[in-house]
Length: 171
Image (tube, rainbow, N blue to C red; front, side, top):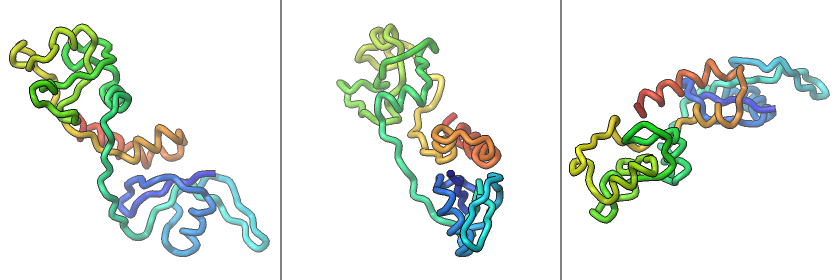
């Protein structure tokens, strides 16, 4: 069984084994805020298994970078061409690498085959094109990661607000 761990700010930190979560609760480092309904038995104790625990002290989490790969870019932009809005499955450098552009999140978009070929190694201004959004490096949101890997409906009320917050930052 797995247990969702929340920081003292209610930000999702990760998922741990339920036995580890019980040890955190028994040692006073965390509090149970949702139970799974299951029970764990020892020789002398019967404990309700926590589904979600809240750490009693805030833990500073370092900013984690998402590496720019073809897969991560296609997932981030949902296979939608930045130029025409149709299905896209190629990456395009807004400022072409041939003109000094870098392979970074603030210079790479998804493009359809046609738009990528039309643009070639030209700048958007040369074609009269504009991007419909500002390019930014994405943030690794633990709530999104948790809901993708472990789809537990009991955790939604704790992960969903953080996922919405991440969408606002990316938008």
